[in-house]
Every structure is written in structure tokens, then in C-alpha cells.
Length: 354
Ligand code: NAI
Ligand code: MG
Image 1 (cartoon, rainbow, N blue to C red):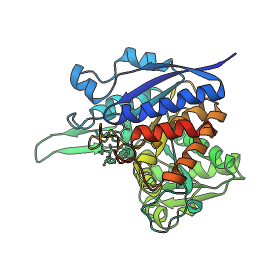
Image 2 (tube, helix red, strand yellow; image 1 turned 180 degrees about the vertical axis):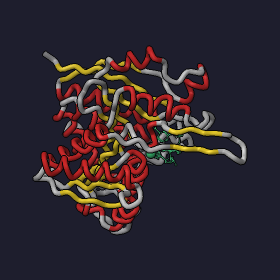
Image 3 (spheres, rainbow, N blue to C red; image 1 turned 90 degrees about the vertical axis):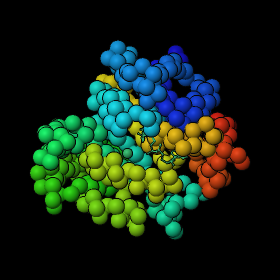
């Protein structure tokens, strides 16, 4: 029987639909090459749709999405929507509703790509950041009192549960074990002594009892920012809480050559609900419609999606094709004239056949 997967496609806003179109071009080719099929349903969601209809994500839509095997997302957000509406109403809602507790972010510098870090070479930069994706300050705890008055008080509490911390650590330990690598916990245990204590104790306990073969290391988040730049080779798998992860993964994106090359998966490893795969970048309104958007990040995210669905052959083809594309054209990303978004998609769709 032919393998078939139900995919929900959320192009979103700005360059989101442009880069997703290239990903789907590559997917068409992979289906022919690897002999699987996909049923794709398009969803019109994001800032533009909110401005048109006042709706961000209806409960019926959420229920429909729940029935898919995976979600492929471009980017959402438009400059004229107030901050928070789409982030909380769509992205965070999906992550929380589907309990996508892992944000899996490879930080890999490919040969041919110019990193802004002078002298950085691919052998020195190949690690994964595992970011907790459902707790910390993103859980929405806290509130505002006396808003707009001199007495205003705002609190934004960091929620950390044993359950939430342990499950993300287990995912990270398993990943480190599969890479024969070490696991580095990144936190701020010297100041955040409550949350840090929970993280550190759980890290030590889970490591000692169930992953004795995995070397454990610890780094404060501020020092991590330094080491990412000066000695990324010290990292293999880095596990961290939600806010720190959000910040250090953008630094990771810089190391690997920019947002156009950074992919992510929001995973529910229990597979009770669909996982969601998306480039790290946003809707880039400054370059929309100009053919300047690099679709590599979106295509890498597609590779993650395929690996998660068990299409390992297709995922390996994507990885090889991206490496080949970047080796040859890594220093010349799409500029809208000599090379465009669609040119890159065409080339990768070709290269996956090699
Ligand atoms: P952004 O990631 O959209 O753009 C930042 C800079 O990187 C811009 O100069 C842009 O041109 C460039 N860039 C981004 N993706 C690129 C690509 N694939 N190829 C070449 N250059 C690329 O971040 P920004 O400008 O802060 O946010 C724009 C909108 O996107 C906002 O509405 C924001 O809320 C939303 N956003 C959405 C995200 C998501 O859907 N997950 C993530 C980040 C921002
Ligand atoms: Mg971010």
C-alpha cells in the first residue's frame, strides 16, 4: 500500500506563502522519487486574514487541524496587526493546543555559507537547540494592575512544572544519545534559583538514572551567548527553557548564516496531536513579492517534517540537496535578480533526484 500523509498547509503572510510554495515544489518531486503521497489542505490564516475577518483561529479550524498528520507553516504576522494578536492567538495557541512541547532547532553551518562569525567553519558548528515550548513566561501567567497610572504593576511569571521539565529533558537526552553526543543544560541557575533548581535536579536525576552514557554539561545563558560565538564546537545538544531558547536560537540562526537558513519543528513526540514545522523567520514584509526570500529554511523544515513522519529517504534527499545547493551557491542567496526564490526551489527540486 502506498504511504500517504495528511498535511495542513499554512502559508500565512508576507513571504510565508512564497517559501512554502517552493517547499511544496520539492515535496511533489520527492513523492515521485520515494513513492509516497500527501493529501494537502490549505488554510488561510494569519494577519491578513485577521484584518479581513477579525478571526485568528476558530475552534472548528483547530479541530480540523488536529486531524492532520503534520502542519507545514510559512510565517504569520503583518505590520498593521497589534503585537501579540497573531503570536498568541495562532502560534502559541497551536503549540499549546497540540502540546508541541519540543522546539527542535538545528544550528548547522553548511559548507559554502558565509557565517557572520569570521573564521567559523562547518566542522565547528553543528548542534541542536532543544527549547521547551509550552511553559516559562510564555504560559501567560501574571497580569496588570492600575494600567496607565503611576501605580501600574505588571507581572509575567515563569511557570516550570516537573512534568514539563522532565519531558523536554528526556527528549533532549534521547537526541544526544542518538548523536553519541553530550547534552548541555542552559539556564541561569545562579539567579533563577527556584526554576533553576528544578531544572538542574531533574537534569541530574534523569541523566544519572536513564542516560548514564550521555555526558552532561551546564552553561549559564549569558555565557552561552558568548560561547555560541567564540566556541560553538563545545555544543552538541543544548536544552533550555522557553524564553532563553527563543533568544539563543536567533543567535544560532546568525551563526549558520541568517534567518533564511534556519528551520524548526514544534513537536509533540507522543504523536497524540500533529507537530508543526516552520522556518524560524517571520513574514519579512520588507522583501515580500520581490523574489528575494530564501526558501532554504522552509525546505529544511519540510525535511524535518518528512523525517518526523518516517519518510527517512525523502528527508535524506532534502539534506543532501540543501548541502549541494549551499556548497555551490551558499555565498549568493536570492537577490531577486540574478537568483530568485523560485530559482532556488527549482534547483533543490532538481537536486533531490541525485
Ligand atoms: P522577519 O524574520 O520577518 O525578518 C527579519 C529580517 O530578516 C528582515 O530583514 C527580512 O527581510 C529578513 N528575512 C527573513 N526571512 C528571510 C528569508 N527567508 N530570506 C531572506 N531574508 C529573510 O522578522 P520581523 O521583521 O521582525 O517580523 C516581520 C513579521 O513577521 C512580524 O509581523 C512578526 O510578528 C512576524 N514573525 C513571525 C514569525 C513566525 O511566523 N513564526 C517569527 C518571527 C516574526
Ligand atoms: Mg524567536
